[in-house]
Length: 410
Image (tube, rainbow, N blue to C red; front, top):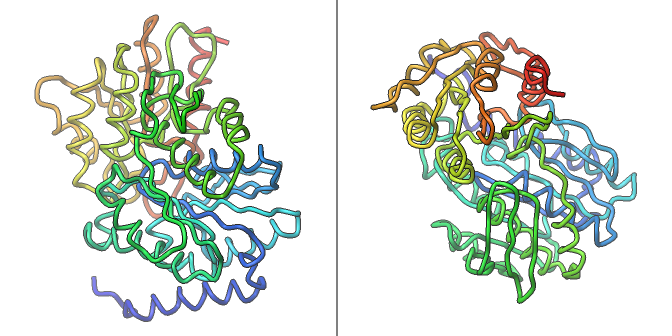
């Protein structure tokens, strides 16, 4: 079907709307320290860590992410199923933050949001780049366009009137240098080498940074990388190291990000957003010392079909029991999506359970003492998206708790 409205008209519409929102709410970003966070993985967790460090240092903080919107102590779930809502949302959010005495705002920024110019009219003091891996390739028209959308956020930092402008980038990533090669005042690279020696397991991390021992009760190497991103930004902002250390030591669980479900059961139950092959591998490697029961969503309908077989390969490689289920089919046949994932299996036979609640229940019933049930793909997503815009209210964690209760765990 041919596009009825030319693409350049659509772009102009979004561009105009972004600046109209900034004008309408009196350019609130000019009165705040704005920290943007972009990348394929780890954005939400890094945002939480940065927010915790700033709060520990005595600042009043606002946070806008895939998980939640928070102004000071007030917080509400992000129910939009998009990280950067349009229609003036971010500008209105920042104005409300100023009205409530906020000094610093941490904003998770996505390529989809950048493509619709939702970052325009937001003047940043700093940008953190976590990593880049293939994602949203069909909507962007390929990896090159995806990278360009991310780099447009870095160029937005270059054009900011704020001083100093700080670029924090992961140099272990192939695209890290591209983000550091922009014209800003402070370039702050970080690498896993900064944390050596380090220890990670499924309960937390211990590492040395700037000659001092740090601990954090979030699991896996992926969370160590997130911590390094936040620490490097904090150092560039001049946050005292003691405040940053205390913030990491006392960070609460990040909702939907390797989040434990605890009902006194003798096995681990983890809910995680992992929806790319890289993030799924990182999660599975963190729990590989356990017998893994994987409850895998079908990666969503109508997009990123390339990764379905790759996800299946990973489930076969790491999981002792594999349960494939529905996730967000939109207008695509959910069984077809799951069968595409199943094509990644060559030796094992996955269980296909279309109903997501039944799939979670099946995984929990299968679990024995010491096992790890990893429920992936949704995290804190509030809905299962179906055909013609339909949606079912959903919570992986809530369903897991209900099914554990049925099994007698309280």
